[in-house]
Image (tube, rainbow, N blue to C red; front, side, top):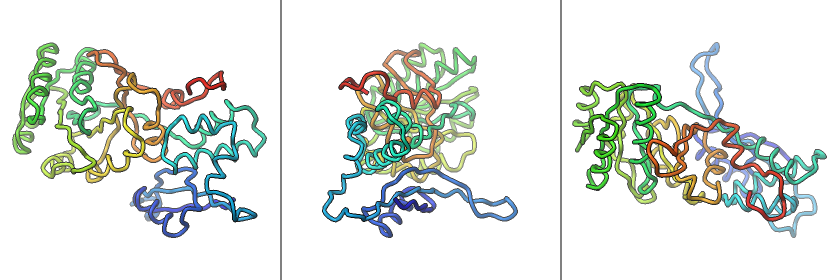
Length: 328
């Protein structure tokens, strides 16, 4: 096998460069962001680095491109259960094959070492800045998540809090957030445009301001320009994108395209209690550099919210004990 590295400003550009220069023969073994260039250690730029594995063509003329996956038959069923995209599946399988070739034995050991080698989760803390803005597609549970985050700041950290909602398209969303504000004994404001949002953020005196944004079908639309301007011109705003673990991994890249114009401080993963697989988590850890801050595990406020460590995130994907067809 031939190992190469490709660098570009973003993951999408690096992937396109790989596709154009190498084609379908390449498999992504690992992706990460590195800093390079600069002068005397200053002014370095961050670029995406893909580590690529290229199959050598020895006696492979009549083999199907999925041969890599089939070579590790013992681990293949468990990789399949992750339900990730073909690109990620091939990368995981190739890594498992390399581990097996080193003499490692045992399905559980090979599988877990594969995860550890390929996935490098990062975690983050919400609330390091004064304003916390939660974005995300429709239906991921942003309003409930905002209430959980606010309750954590209020009761566990002793902070004064306030809500601002931009979700004026759904009357129920405004009423839901107002109900939470009554329970948490904090103000709830409604902003109808970017100027009102800016004015509220400048005048509300709370330690923490939590902004609930309207959901949208980001497979078909983009982030509103006034909101982008607000998020990119203020230094006191954190931008967190909420994604449901019930989403299809194949939709991830398209769902995240509208957020390419803003800096994502972390991902918030919702509805862990409603899915039987961790396909979106696997896809996210494989392809993205942004950290994961918290995960919701139910509808109860202020409960059903956890702040996982990097080891816990990998732990949710690990294979433990049985290899006889039980769930991964």
